[in-house]
Length: 514
Ligand SMILES: *Cc1c(COP(=O)(O)O)cnc(C)c1O
Image (tube, rainbow, N blue to C red; front, side, top):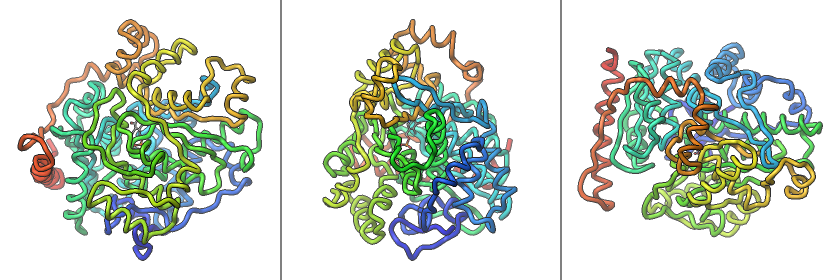
C-alpha cells in the first residue's frame, strides 16, 4: 500500500515515509492511495479475533509486507495493547441508555488516545531501529495526547526514539499534568506554554518542515499523523462486530447499519470511523458532540469553516479546538478531489477560514451531523446518567451523551422496546473516550464533591491513585510575549519555536540522558 497527499496525487510514498513525517511535504495530510474493500465474509472471519489480532488484520491491509513482515507487525500490535487492562478484549462495551457504550479508555493513561498512539509509537520505534535513525516526536496536547505519548515512548524505551511534548499551562487537569510530569524517562521532555489549545500547532508544523534530515527524523504524532486514524479504525470494526454478535446478526449486512455518536475535537477519531465505513463496514450516521468551541458544529450546519476569534475555556478541554486538522481528510474522502482540496485548504492555511461549496456541504450533511453542548448541559447529563444507571462518565463522554439525547437516542431505562422505538431500530454506539478519573475538577462540578468522593472510593482505578502520590518534575516554561492580540501570538510562537529547537537538539544529542 502506497500513501499520497490529500492535496496532490502525484506525491507517492511508502507507509514508513508517511508515518515518519506526519504532514505530507506539500502541507497536506497523508492518506492511503486507496481504501481496500472489506466484504461480509472477511468481516465474519474477523468476528472471532482478539483485539490485537483484529488490529493486525486491519493494519495488514495498509502496510506492505515488504515494509513490515507478519511476525514484526504481529509483535507491534501485541506490544501496542500491552498497557490495557485486558489486551485481548481491550475495548469493552456496555449497554447504557439504550446504546452500546464503547469504553475506549482502559489503556495506560485512561483515554482513547492510548489506542492510536501506542500503535504509532511502536511503529516509529520499529522503523527507528531498523534504519538506525534517531527519531524525535513532537506533540502539542490539549490534555490526553501528551500523557499517552509520554507513556508509550517511555515504554518503548528505545534510545533512538525521543519525545518533546507541549501543553497549555494551567489548561489541563491536575491528573493529566501529573501523567506528564511524573514519568521518569531520559527519552522524554515536557514543556508548558502560556497560550491556548492549538497555539503550538504552527511552531510544530514549522519545525517539522525545517528540521527533517536524512540523519534525523522529526515526526508529529497528533492525529494529522495517518497512523492515528488507521489504528482508530480498529475500534469501530471491533464495536460493530460486538454489536452484531449481541444482536445475533451476521456481520456485513448493508441493511443493518449502526449509528455512531462521539465527542469530537480534531476529528481524528471520526476520520478513523469514516475510513472504516468507506471500506464497507455498515456504519450509518455519525453524530459529533462538540462543546462551545464549535467550528465542527458550524461547518456541518452552515458550511462555514471559520476559526473562532478565541478559544473558550470549558469543562471538556480535550475537545477544545479551533481548527480540526482532520477535516481535510474528511473532505478528501467526501470529494476525492485533490486539486480542489489543495485550493480550498490553501485558503484555510492563509486566512483561517473558508466556506464549503454547496456540493461538498450536501455530501457532508448526508453522513455527518453534530450537536453543540454547553457545560451546563454536559453537567446535567452526567447527573442524569448517574441517576438512571449508576454509571459515572467523564465530561467528554457526557458531551456525546447530550448529543445522543438531543437525537432521541437516549432512554432512561434499558427496556428494549422503548429503545428500538427511539432509535428507529438502528443500533447506536456511543464512543466513551476517557475515564472520569482524569477529570476530578469537571466531574466534581457535575456531581458535587460528595458524588466525586463516592466515585473515588468505589471505582477510581488503583493505578490512578498511585499516580497521584508521585513526585512531579517542573516542566520547561515557554512564556507569552507582548500583551495580547495576533501580533503578540506570532511573536510568542516564534520564540517558542526557538525554545523547542534547543530542546530537540538536546534530546537528539543524547543530552537528555541523566
Ligand atoms: C482527544 C479526545 C477527544 C477528541 O478526539 P479527536 O480525535 O481529536 O476528535 C475526545 N475525548 C477525549 C477524552 C480526548 O482526549
